[in-house]
Length: 269
Image (cartoon, rainbow, N blue to C red):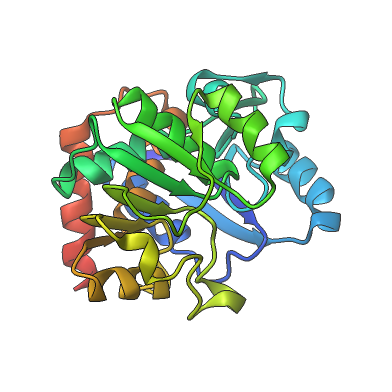
């Protein structure tokens, strides 16, 4: 066991139910590293203070909804996917560098679930940090990506940046896969879906990045329509694994990630 204890954190609007502390602690323990992992639920007004404290007092930290873009102005550099996606979920405090492991975690989740995305017509709901990351990762993987958000003017700008298509009506149907990246369906919107059952016409798969509740209203409706459903629990684990590899300056291994996830699930059973 490595004698150094990493001081890590997570910041978001409401991370009170997040399993990130347990996941990171488990992964790092399996990799022979001790850590202390704290969660910070902060309002927009409190984000500046939280970001400065995390950068000053912690070895590294993660960022979740809705601050994956807000953190960027505090950093010295934006690396790799974080630059391409326009969203950061992982920060190394000593260097002030931001990274994004959502995309690789998302694609590994799909691979593990046997979901093929190449040449599939995919609707991504939501164009925040998670929506951008998912849309960009899917495009890299060869999917035909459509992105939707209510603010049409902002949507067009984001789609140009990512090289994807702006969707006019999420209820129109005709997509192979639908992915909810809006956050609608969790916390104070639990029991609400961002779309009605009409949106699932012609689709075979529905994915919700929400993992609490385990089956969101979006997924419940999709299942009623006969679709394969998947929540974001595996993605949360895999993006955490890739973040931990960055913390340790260690080359990631997808086989190792899958084995660790299987062991983690076995411990939760």
